[in-house]
Length: 225
Ligand SMILES: [Cu+2]
Image 1 (cartoon, rainbow, N blue to C red):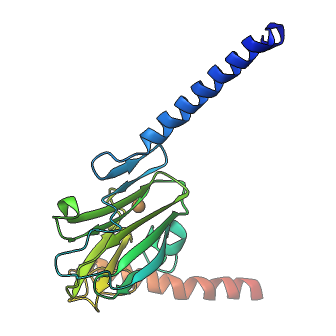
Image 2 (image 1 turned 180 degrees about the vertical axis):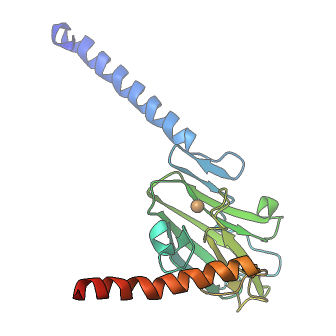
C-alpha cells in the first residue's frame, strides 16, 4: 500500500508502524516483568530471585558461586525405580554465598527447582522457585544466610519428588542429611514387599522348581531319542 503513497505520507506510515512495533515489544517485555517477586512468561517462571538483599546474619556477600542444575528423566537412569532427577543431588556453598543458578530442563515436560527453608523476610514463604514448562534455560540468583543449614531442593509437581527429583543444598556443610535423596541417603521408611509364606505358596514354589528341573531334562531326552 505504501507504494501508492507520497513520500511524506510514506514516512509518516513508517513512523506509525515503528511505534506500533515498539509498543508491541514493550507489552511482551511487561509480561516478563516483576509481579510481586515473580517473573513469568509462557516458557516459565522465576520467583523470589535475590541478587542484593543480605540475610540478617551476613555483613556482606561471602562468595559468588555459579551452579548449573539440569533436570530430566535421563538423570534418573542410574537410580533404580526413579523416573526424574536433577543431574546432582547435593551442593555445598559457603556462608552468605550468592548462588547464581542456571537451571536447564532437558525434558519436554514441566519441571521445577524449589529451595525451601530460606528466611521469610527476604523470600516469601521461605521459598526460591524456578520453573520451566519444557526444554529451556533460566538464570536467577539467591543469597543464603550464614547459618550452617541444609535446605530441601525439589520439584513440587505431583509425584516428581517421590520419583527422584529431590536434592539438598548445604550451607557450610549443612546441619543434617535429608532422607530419600537418590544415591545419597536412605529413606525414612523403606518400601517392603514381604512374602506371606503359607503352605499353598510353598506348594506353588515346589511345583515351579520341580517343573523347572524336569522340563529341560524331558526336552533333552526327547532330542536324544
Ligand atoms: Cu519435575
